[in-house]
Each structure stands twice: as C-alpha cells, then as structure tokens.
Length: 357
Image 1: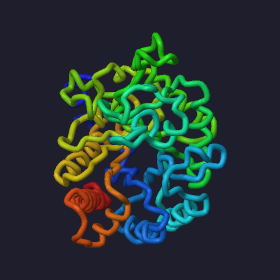
Image 2: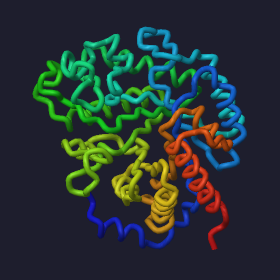
Image 3: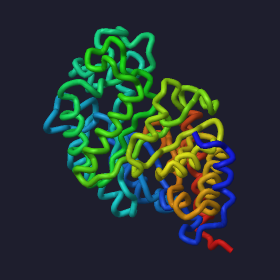
C-alpha cells in the first residue's frame, strides 16, 4: 500500500484545471423493492432523486429476477422483464443511470438461509457439505472454479442488464471470507489471492465482451492488517495484492462507515476510478465527500479524474427507505439514520455545484 506521505503529496498538488469540484458520480445504492412496491419506488426515483442531485442508482436485485435461461435460481418475489422496465423508464425520466447488482462470490447465504444459487446448485458451493444450517460462518461463497458455474452467472448477468437497459453492472464481492477452501476439490493448490483475482478477472472479461463496465466493492483490495481497517472493511487473508492483477477500469466502491478513511486516494493513485460509500453517519459522509473533493481539486489531472464521487448505501428495504424519506416516523432507527445521512450528504454535494472562486 502506498505510504501516507505519498497520498498527502498527491492531495497538495496544484488544483487540476481538468476536473470540477462537482463529482461526476452522485449515487444511491439500495435493494430492489417488492414487486408490489414498484409504482411507489418509481415515483421516488422521478420525484426525489433529481431534487437531491442523484444521477446514479445501483439497484441490488440479487436473484430476484425471473431468469429465462436458468429459471431455477429465480428467488422469492422475482421481477419480470416488464416490471424491471418500469423502474428503468423511471430512471430515464429522472436522468438517472440504472446499474443492476447481483452480489457475487460471497454473500451466498444469510443466517440460516442459503441463497437460491447454492440451494439449487449445491455443486457450486465452496464448502459443500460443511457448516450445516450455516453455523460457524458469516456467509457462504460459491466456488469460482466449479464446472458450469460461470455459464449460469454470465447468462444471469446478461439477462438482468438487458432488462435494465444497462451498460454497467455491479458485481458486489464484498466481505468475502470463504475462498480456496482446503476441502474444495476445485480449489486445491490455489490461494485466496489467486481465487479472488481470478474471479474478478473472469467477471470483468465477460462484461467487457458484452460492452459493459464493471463496478464492485473495494474492501478485499485493502490490507486490513497493516492499515488497521481489520477483516470487515479490508482483507486479512491476502486478497489485497489482487489490486495489481485486475483491470484498472473497474469502478471501486470504497465503503467505510465508522471513519472517513483516506482510501479513495489509494484507489485513485493505484489507477482505479473510485467512489466513496457512506451509510448512516452524516458527519462521516461529509468527510468522505471532502476526501473525494480534495483528490479532485488537489491532485494531478490523472489521479484527480479517478476520484469520481459518492455512492450512498442504505442497507434497509426500499419501501422503508422511501417511507422514511417522506417523513414516516414509524420506520426504525437505522432507516431514519441512513435517510438523514443521505439528505445531509447530498445537500453538501449540491453545494459543490456553485462555481469555484
């Protein structure tokens, strides 16, 4: 990892004339609503997002889509193509870029519930037959080396992107703890670094072949042992070295929720476009925006251009977020906090539209 002195040096360079202080990416990440809530959510997109200054919506569907090639992995309250297109049309009307997401590699379970991919395709499980009821682990991972896996994943990405009319896809890949399990027959002799970098490259290669760009969470590219970020916001199993083994056009979504860590500068200096991601603390979110601004205004033109903006995360249901946004006091504490943080952050973002004197 670059030393702090190098990062500070980048921030004190003369302002770049080629970048404005208004960040080009001003995003919101949220889970897809229930299919019954499409109309309400579409209204929110058209009514609220332009007023707030949002121009990018990362909508996490996961497997809640009626896939045609692999219908067996469609999960729960799944969207039809026509229902997705209603949301896509609302985004067009609001001049908001729609980026669909399926959280890949890790997060294939939550508590006792295993996601549909591994429920119906247990042969893709990195730890097949281990951890009954998911006890003793955070989340399951699929095995990137499992025969037949990528055909299912790639087909599903293509179908969802086609329905959204999207030229960009968010692959997720945060908080991946299970990689290259010693008991996995497909991963023998492979390290977590090789496995993680290989999957990033495989997904990128497929998206590139279909003319699409790739976004992902950036935490596995940070060395949690040397920078004090720990195993959640960063990696402690060696995957951080993958940063030198993957394409530089991947947009890194750099999430930190307890402190405004200076890692956007690290990603920007490493050659990646980066957005800082906030959650529910307004003060930290505004500090993260300032980190982005400092790089855009203080670094040389190449580094400055990589500092792309903000992606606010919500981690609550879309319906709850929308209700709280419009003043429903019945919503929970964390929902209210993330809505307040969203509003405060984008108030600060909009202030950047004023000319720099």
